[in-house]
Amino acid sequence: MTVHQLSVFIENKSGALVSVLRLLKQENIQLIASTIADTADYGICRIICSQPEKAYNVLREAGVAVSLCEVFAVELDDRPGKAADAIELFAGEGISIAYLYSFLLNGKGVLIFRTDNTEKAAEIITANGLTVIEEKDLSLLL
Picture (tube, helix red, strand yellow):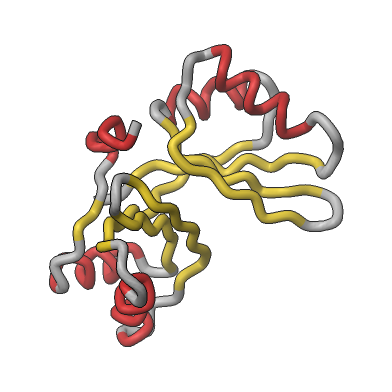
């Protein structure tokens, strides 16, 4: 019910991000979604890609600080308030969202998020009939 996401720790300096992206390009790994959260000294680039395990290994071998974790990818109708409705389901059950990013694709909204309780979040998704995008279906986004 989850997808793998890379979290790449990158220094806040010119060229640091492009070196990571170049490594992925050389291995023909397609980015599906990404976001960067920064501080004064470094950024965390979160990436959903076509081959997350391969990307993880390529970056680790190149000495890049990277981790691989599971996140939820939920598909929503592209209508105002649908993201709020979905997140309200988790908040109502006391589930915190650690971080979230979203994008629109083919007339649908996609929420990528991580919670503090993966098992309970999965139960909420199932109980409320939310549509999840699974790892095997990521190629459909390309």
